Structures are given as C-alpha cells and as structure tokens.
Image (cartoon, rainbow, N blue to C red; front, side):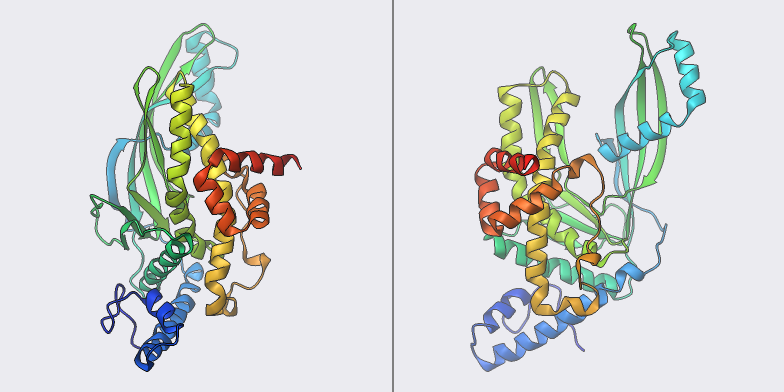
Length: 369
C-alpha cells in the first residue's frame, strides 16, 4: 500500500488528521476517497508501531545529541547518590578524613551532562511511529483547542541534530544515554568538607521528559525556563507506554505555562534561600502537573484509539497499562486519575490552565478522601 507523506496531502494541502476530519463532514467524493486512504494508512502505521515493543534492544551506535553542559539532571544526581552510598569503603575513608564518625551530608555540585542517543533502526517501524507522533499530537492540540508549538518531530540519524530557534523540537530515538561529570561535596557537622570528583554514563530510564531548568541569578532571584527540545525513547516493552509518550510530553508543554506561572509567583513571593530549595519547591508543582497530565493522557489516548480499533493489536484491557513507577514525581498520579475522571477532560484542563492552585486544592482533598 502506498503511504501518505509525513507532512501534507498533496491533493488538498491539508494534514492527514484534518483530511479525516473534513471527510467525516461528508463532502465531495474525492475527499471521501482520500479519507479512506488516510484512515487505512493510519491504521497500518499503528499496526507497525504495535510491533516496536517486541524489537531487540540495542546499545549502539551512540551519537551525540548535546555536548557537556551544566545540567541539574535529577536522574543523574539520584544515580550518583545511589552509587556512592554503595561504596562503603570510600565513605569510611571520607569519614576518617573528616574526623567524623556520624553521618555526613552529600551535595552534588558542578554537574555537567552530555546527551547521547541510539538512533531508531531504519526498518519501517520508526517511520510509522514518527507519523503516529505527528498525528496524535495534532489530535492533542485539536482536543485542547491550542496551537501546534512543535517546530519539528524527527528521528535523528546523525550527531548534534539541529534544535529549532523557535518552537519545540521533538527527537524520536531508540535509547537515550547520559554521560556525566560532577563534584561531590561531603560535609561533616563540624563544617569540614571534602570534595570528590565523579564521572560515568548511564542509559536513561525516562522514556520522555520535559525538563524545567531553574537557575540561581542572585540572592532571591531565579531564572525559570523549559528546554526547547524533548526526547522520546521507543525502547519499551509496553505498547500503551509507547503510544502515550508523545501525548504526555505534549501535555506537559501545554500545561507547563500555567505551572511555571505558579512557580514564578512562589519564587517571587517567598524566595528560597538556595537553588536546591528552589528546585524542591518546583518539583512539588511538577508532581501536581504530573497528576493532571496522567489523567488527561488516559482520556485523550482512549478517545484517539477507539475509532482506529487499536485494541485488535494489543490495547485491549487494563492489563496493558503499565504500573506507575514509585518515583516522587508520580506521588499524586493516582489522585490525579480520580480527579480528572470526576471533573471530565475539558473541565480538568480548563481548571488547571486557569488556576493550578485551585486544582491542587482539589487534588489534595482527593488524597485525604
């Protein structure tokens, strides 16, 4: 079957999703014929995408997405702390050097991260997933009545892919790796401290991420911004997860404006004394954002999948939905699912965009119920 182009239908100059929507209005016969072809191509793409979770995991080749840069990466910091806590001999030596028998505190400083990726295999599945990501994000924007902010959704095959000057660049990769180097400071209660340099690399467990950067500008002043790029990994064994990644990350950017407005207000009204305290406050609001995103993803994805009969190739029951990881960022996810189900998708979305604080109040009442 001849596939549609990845961007526009040449016959009408409109996207595949808009062609489907137009066809449903029952217009001219040529539009209906094109609609049938578009629907068949989309279904074929979804079937190809359903096979991605069964593909072999690959460790290479590793290409560079971004060179070393100062980056308070929470996943890397957690990895560093976990690794150091397992090195009992090193910790004993550090205590002896500090002249301290009690617990010492650890801070990770001057963290720099280099982003690398394993490109998707050119086997037809990657191209189908790229087309799916474009189509489902169009659906998200239409559902939210919002403008499409993506400058590009691409599957890079060379190092250092271009990041657009305006809009968001989404990169589809097989796996994401992070190389790191940092200074760890161990401090005793007496105030004495020892610095220890670490470096290494890991494969990321975050299939998708919209990172929020908080920078210390001056005493009581912080800079706040979301990165202009997002990375979506396809290395998963769960079909539902694979379908949900572009929906979830798109919602984070959509809702992020409201979240960032709330964070900026809190930083101004009650300035934290340290950058770490500012990040902890921001992480609380990001957990609230995660809760509404989780609820909306479920609604939007089921609404999108239903007319395409996705359950015929793997999206059949609650058993296909992965267990939410027991991470701090997901601490409100279950309450969010209940609240969004109670409010309805449109009301929940409007409430959060208008007042994240009021949404949070209702969310916490769900937790206490």
